[in-house]
Length: 201
Image (cartoon, rainbow, N blue to C red; front, side, top):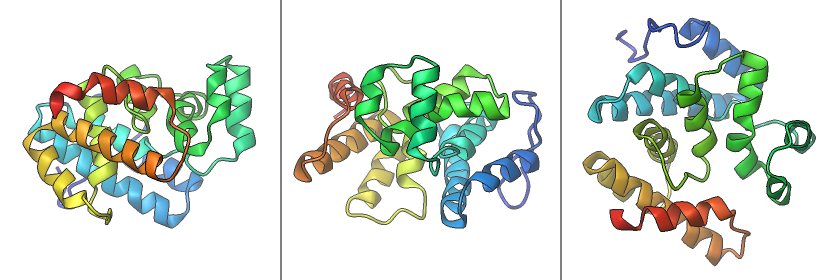
């Protein structure tokens, strides 16, 4: 590890150095979103070390998780149609698309094909009924990174450091409550995640 808690890639998971990948991500995001990605990268590494998961994969997935966050709806809709993705996706928006569809943009534009990393990006927005530890780490790192400040975030941090799985359920429960209270549409995958992780109360 370097003194600034970043990681130098050594596993040949992708064809970039960290600096090169950071530059690629920075090109696509405004500074506020980019700084969030750097914090998620660091948080993901911390959770990986706590949970015996490869910190390099966690760092890469954390850095990339919002790569597509600031794309136009047109870009996402084109990918959904061109790749014949689930048409149900068209009923939703960026909050869902930037993970599920964003992974396809990462493949096409950055030529990153590691499915563990791509799945962690895909699942960071709505989770999944089955999530690897890496998926869980990026899902939670995005939610609890130090820049987050919302009611319940300290509790989420405490739960996640005690039990990654319990953190996943807590976040999913909080997200569903927010969507219901604000009369927002609920993506079916979010409900599937909630139901599947019920045992982690």
